[in-house]
Length: 230
Image (cartoon, helix red, strand yellow):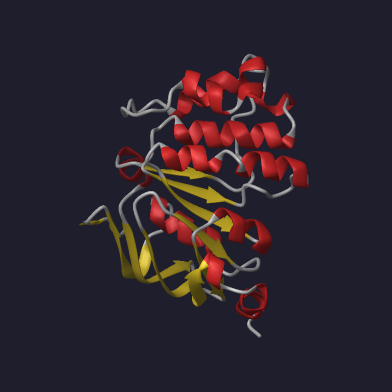
């Protein structure tokens, strides 16, 4: 589904990614690990069209998409759950969800399906999004992205700032999302959570891929060494 080859990205005069290559298959869950500043969020930003690549290529569903804008990416079935959720604070829970479906793409996800996935949101649909707990706001952010009916969902630090029991609840919904024909890229700093959630893992270190392999075959020691550049 996705093939990223030798991707480099600059933020002004600073090179954030130097040489990142990875692939994601249909219906696959892939985790990108790494410490702060390793290039994980920049990688997702390049995939969705927020950051133009300085070098390398991105191929999505057999077509080159390097450097296209965000609107084209979403229209083609890529959606981002951003770090920090970034909900619209002046809108209700349901209004935030509806915004995610404005492109009118056909697919399995509708308001009713989102409420089936996250029943607590149905109970709070008319409340301001900012009145929800952090975990519930994360559910809104995921639901908003799903409303565009993506084929590839990019999840950026969806466990950030959440209690362990809430993290487990959020991650427990991911298999149901994949079952609807959606591939996932999960950016995480939590090694244990990433190994549970993904089939394959790529560890970034200073803008480069330091380690890759099947989640079941990688030891925490090997990941830790790549994570910290040991």
